[in-house]
Length: 301
Image (cartoon, rainbow, N blue to C red; front, side):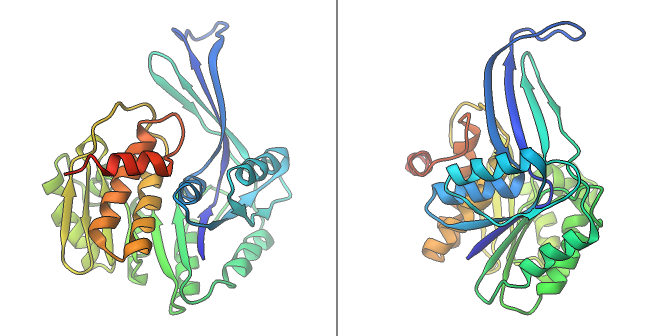
């Protein structure tokens, strides 16, 4: 079974406004409400690609119940910990001449509620896959990633981590199966500016030396790079298309990579499927579908 963890999921309220002006009334001409959060996105795309997963994390209040309902409508199973204080955050994403985001805080999570998540994670068994992604809210200990991976270490569980800076670097000692920084996040770790595909390889190798088995770097329109644990390096430009919405593209890449790998055991196939899943989400107002990914796969040389 595949499990995803989103510590601070959301309801994303996406609106479009013509010629937005501050300090006055603006009216939307487009509205969309979606389940939000990096792990949530991974679970949805996995489902779209035919892979079942269970979404874990914390929810609270009426927005938490709405999030669960919307995930169920997407065919995603969830086993969230219900938090007593606060409510699942609402993130407003406004698109006009530019893009503006206002992200909510999320609920306050108590120690016993953290313990409840740990107890659920303790039920994972050999052969399961655990995907942890996104930031850690201020109401949780900053070392949550480390706590989880150290707790489950040695049990035959494959870890996939998509996080920034110390959250990522500090778990490399637990030899995650896959990590997926983007090129900006990778550059921030080493204090360099990475723009071209070839430039990311030396930094990605350093993360492998620190313990990561496979390193997948998303690079937006520049494409992606994979350093596989067998020593192979895969690079490709992104499929051609019009950028509509970059939110969830990296998460879709993770879902596509894992689907391709589980289907074939082949890193090249996994890399291409991940690249096309990320691009399919970027080219759409919603997350990638199987049909969209398969269509883009046919365009890769």
